[in-house]
Length: 175
Image 1: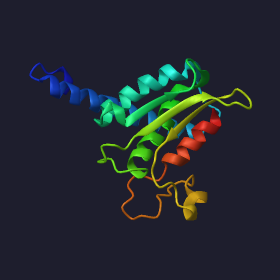
Image 2: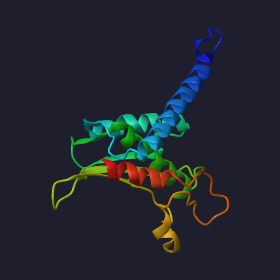
Image 3: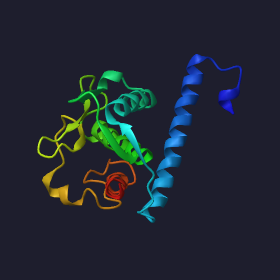
């Protein structure tokens, strides 16, 4: 309703678009959590992963209001066709990129970047997508637990539900 107001300026319209994008994202997350109980439910679609990454990077940086150069795209080939439920792909990549920014480096570090690297494996020509940061990595003491539901790391200041990596893994497995 706010976005329909004629009294909003360009900045306010941009903010309402961000609110709408996040509301849709949260709704999709809720739907995907519900789908976990029906693990066999996916709607796979064919998509060019390189082009999808470009669109994702624009949406991600715009929504989080971070400079576009904080999310670097590193394609190793011109086109990579994959088949996956696109809402699942979006949720997994969003979660991993957000984690990379939040835990892999300081968000206020102007030189910190996250890389989306896609290509094909040399051994079997299968497509891959990696999300890379230059942070300290996951401490060895908790590596075996990071995919457990509600696990939030060792630091008390960790925010979130502790479901992100658990849901991401489940969504990848059902695809």
